[in-house]
Structures are given as structure tokens and as C-alpha cells.
Amino acid sequence: MKDLLKLYLKEHIPAFILFAVCCAVFALSFRLYGLPLSAVAYPAIICFIILITFIVMRFFRFNRKHRILRSLSEALTEDMLPPAENADDMDYRRIILLIREAAQANELAGVKRYSDMIEYYTLWAHQIKTPIAAMRLTLQNEDTQLSRRLKSDLGRVERYVDMVLAYLRLDSSSTDYVLREFELDPLIRSCVKRFSGEFIDRKLSMNFTPTKLRILSDEKWLSFVLEQLLSNALKYTPEGGITIFAEEPETLCISDTGIGIAPEDLPRIFEQGFTGYNGRRDKHASGLGLYLCRRVLKQLGHVIRVESEPGKGTVMRISFSRKK
Image (cartoon, rainbow, N blue to C red; front, side, top):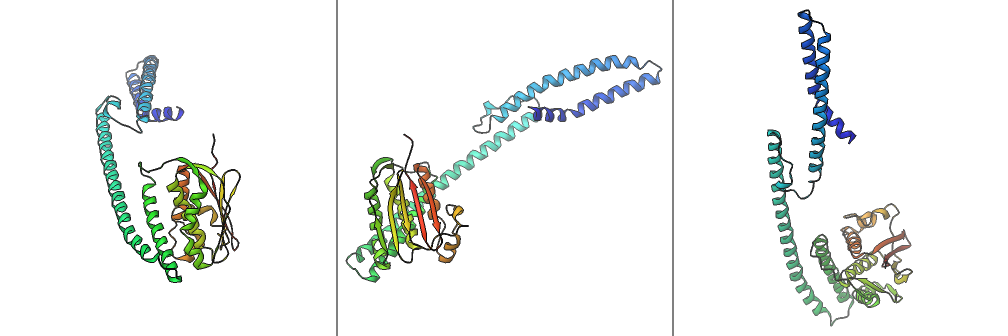
């Protein structure tokens, strides 16, 4: 209120200057005609009181109008605007409505472009999965080092396709979350099974201690997160293996014996596009995997944390605990 009053008085400085000039003209005229100057003081005081009263009354109207305009930051229609009191108000009213119409048109165009993009990439993902499935079917009867490597590469391509779809759908109003209670262990086994060829080919161990957790989440999206975390763990674990276990309260842990994460990179690994020291060495890191994991888990109501030490490995923790 104080700042608004200062702004209002600043706008009316010309009125006070004009009043002072008028008083000076009257005083000069009275002096030239030899009239007593005291005759000017009384009407000047009365006019000043009238001026102050007028300004105060205008301030209350100004303040009410200001509050109405401040409340129109969201939905704006012509009926919600305060009535125009002069030509300037009418011009500003017309400009505001034109800007609002242009903003609504741009918003609708943006929604349509986003919808068309989602539709295109969804179609593209389904189309590209067809040859991937055909290649996987061709390789399923072979069990050689080459076939396992090809299956691993095909799995990586599938995860990249899923990553694209997840990235596009994150901010969509129609994201298909289906929350229900289910056993976590079968989902973990299913995710680990998809990497079995890579574990065998790279001679890495997998130690899984059943968590016996029953959680409330979305199986499809949580499966996407677990696969991303396992893929990251495998990518940066040249030897040793991965361990999956549970901690209290309701926390899933994915631990690896990989190269670890540099301390200066830890605060930023969940940022969009951040690859860190390891990502720059890998040359193929996109910086989207962990960003998508955190976004998805946040929307599901879960929390992800990371602990890591260079040369000793990384532990990813997903907390499923929730308030009753």
C-alpha cells in the first residue's frame, strides 16, 4: 500500500506544481495592483484542501482499480476488466484484449503442435519396434557371444525409443499412470532378465535379495525407471557386479561396483542434459536417463537419492514410503 501511494502521488506531482504556479500568479497580480497579499492566502488554503480531498478520493478509486487489474493475471475476459473512464483506459482495454486473444491463439497452436508431435513419435516408435522385434526373433535361437552382444544392442535401442516416448509424455495431460498396489520383486526380476545376456557376455555378477515389498505405484513407468538405472549401472561397471536389495523404510537399493561419480558431479546428475565427467568420457551419454527417472518418480510420489565414491561404485536408492 505504501509503495502504491508513492506511485500515485508521483503521478500527481504536475497537479501540485500547477496549483503552486496558479497561487504565484495570483500573488503577483495582487502585488502589482497594490492589493494585500493576505487576501490570496485564504482562498489558496481552501483550494489546497479541495485539491487534497479530490486526490484522496481518486486514490481510493485508483487502489480499487489496481486490485482488479492485479487479480486478472490468469483468466481474462472483457467483462472482468474495470470500466473505462477515459480515452487512455479504452485504448489500454483494447490492447489488453488483443494481447489476450493472441496469447490464446498461440496457446492453442502450441497444444496442437505438441499433440501432432506426440502422435508422430508414438507412430514412429511402434514402427521402429517392429524390425527390432523381428531381429530379436531371429536371434532368439542362437546363444553365441555375437548373438548376446546383438541382443544387448537391440535392448539398448529399445530403451532409447522408450526414453524418447517418456520424455515426450512427461508434460502431457494424458500421461497413462495407473496406480495400484503390487509386489515389487516380480517386476525387478523381469527388468533384470532383460539384461541377462549383457551380464553373461561381460561376466558381471547379479546379486538379488528379495525385497518382499508391496508398493503403490505404476508398474509400466516404474519398470522404465528400473531399466534405466540398471542400464546406467551396467554401462559404468567394467568388473564386479550389481546388487539389488531393500532397506528400511520401504527403500529399494541398486548398488554397483563401477567407476563411481565424481563428487563435483553428484549435485547435478539429475539435471536435464547433464552428462558429467563419466558422460563426457563415454561420448554417447545423452544426460536424459537420470533426469527422466527423477521426473517419473516424482510424479509417482517416490524419491530417488544417490551415493557414490569414485573407483568404488554407486548406490541408487528409491524410497517408496508414503504417509497413510
